[in-house]
Image (cartoon, rainbow over the protein chains, first blue to last red):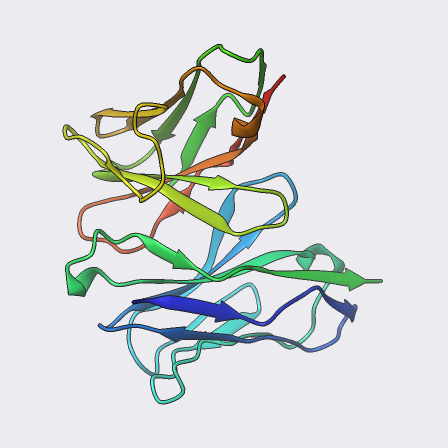
Length: 115
Length: 115
């Protein structure tokens, strides 16, 4: 079945440091891949997405490239800010295999950025 | 665009009572809505998928008689927790998607506390 695995957190960085949060997946079809961010006490916000191999999703300085050969979708940001402190979820959705479009989430990675 | 609201944001109720949570898509027609439950410091657990005008599809282990889902219109889905007990206390999040789109847009969540 489909699954998503994220690196365990928490990840603690100083402001302006480089961020990488690893995400790998297993899927039987051709999934779309997503990164969602959750700030304390709130719901999830879509951060970026990629729908096919070699696509790069980007938003607010964050990037992730859909790597089919390594089944990965690592999240990166060149210079983090304190306001980036949140929980980040990697997820996949596979409509084309006849699923309902439900998301399969990774376990989430907490990022804490210190000034 | 793609805004999803939830109401209420927080609710406290006594054990044995029922609680209704509303999920609305404000600027698009949501053909499919999803209900998730999130425990502290954990990932989201999909409870059920609902399509407008039809019965919800519940995930394995979710009691459909306890968690009643109604998706009567293209902009509104409701989750009713019947005869709530303290173990039902959790953060409930809905999401919505439109047509064949694979991107889900999430509501801000509802914090339920059962005393």
